[in-house]
Length: 259
Image (tube, rainbow, N blue to C red; front, top):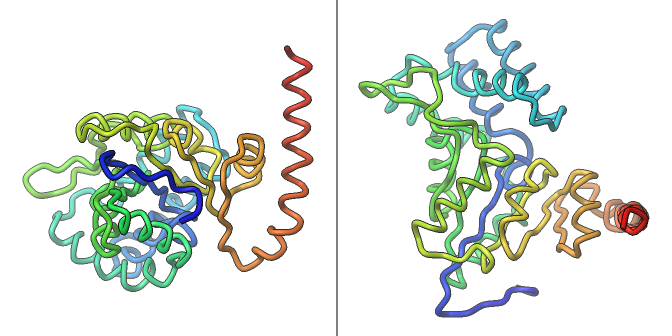
């Protein structure tokens, strides 16, 4: 793959965000929708959960109250349920919702890493058990996600640690790299969201996939490669870079003025 700097003696990891990077849409939404269809909760429950999800993703904020609201939403719907039961349902939901929503282009990038001997890990705010299921189905190495507390084989509805979002993703990949004796400066990270800047900034080879406007500007200003697999990619290919270059140039000028 163009741009790869490969050393056969240096182990590397390619980290992939999931929502809108691996899949079109939110895996947490897929999980909630699938469980709602199976009678796990009411329309009122899913309405509150979807609202929390939308607020969190659209706000793009590190505000504590927004994150806490989303943390609660992320684990409430599996609280009280058996781990094995949720695993079986998760497999059904993967087949029903996740598999059809996968970006083929992203999977090809991941497979190129695997072919070169790299590890491929998912990094997501979704429940880690569901993220691991997705990683298994895709033939990846593993997954880092939000850990749900388990007591006596059942989910309590509480978190074990923090929501894996923003700065927490950077913390998580640092811990993993340290455990495996891997230099993050040799590693890759892929994401669609500016909120994942801490993740992207921790590795030596950051990449943008289907980037939001802020990440596209950042990618251009830093010279990061951009992959866009969306249906309107032809429009993004010609118009997006023009807008990004203008915005990136403006950021550059602003930075110079502050010196």
